[in-house]
Length: 420
Image (cartoon, rainbow, N blue to C red; front, side, top):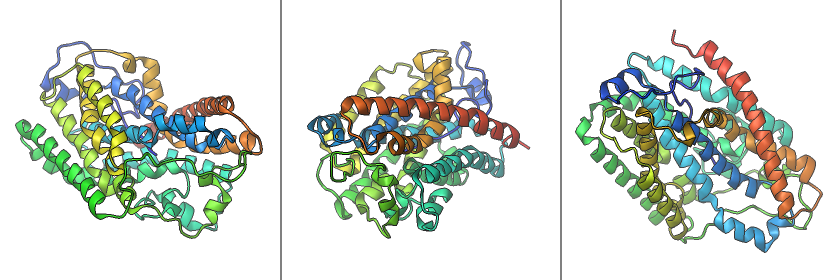
């Protein structure tokens, strides 16, 4: 599943950034100050939590619950596109915030340095934790080296895509986003303000055409079923390892993946346009072309689009239907922050949760593997047992994420990411 983009607010690595005041909004002030956007920071937590809910359902191998009719019904209402919606939000938000926080005069070298420092330390620590708790055989370099380098989703094989800490797949897309941003930025800036909305519409049409081509001409599922489900092993006793963390998984020389699914969901280049939708949305807000502050219509449209994912092929489930309303939600929340309109997501506790969401996203799977190996494996549980382990995973992952954010992320960014 996914991962969150980084830097929110006025750059996220500078804790204590001042929230926007209630002075009248002006284009000039927004362009000059690039004020903090606390609502977008807080909203990151909900996206990360959506991913967690899906992962807790499919990555905690609680038997016989996972083999029950009750589980099947629950999974019908908590399908893969729930987590995919969180990832889509992160990709759009990443483009929005990267453009928002890219100040005039920032060098490309400084930009790349900040991006590396933001994602790699936490990613490497989460990967190391997974290697330890899952006893990953280091002799199988194909399993872990591409993942550590964040190049593992460029090849359509589960051996690498799901070869280590599964949620890190989205970071491989983020790396492409960051590499491409300074290169495409001059073209973005040349778009006349009055043509920004048209540009977003054309980009959206291009995204639809791309995934339609994958659906029509690339091998893969053509039905509308929500096919993502846990891979089960025989018996009613819970295993000690979820399949993606099991010795049998790491021992397989080659694990194929559906080419159409891979292209639509995990192939970095296919997700790149989503990032630039966020970039264009940031320009719209900064230059006063997006002044809507009511979330009612964007959220209603998003709910309808999410419901529609049940009746479309997988190529459209994972992001295509959600992109337009998701972009509208991001832009509207930013516009609200600029005007000093505070909601739940701007509350200090939500902002704190948003700040730790990147680490939470990455550490949740290692935590689930640890709990499975030590508390779930060899035993039998029903839905109450699963709910208890899911809650324990949430608490432990949140605590570890907070430690990573405060003791790793913040010190590194303060020490090394400042402009030279």
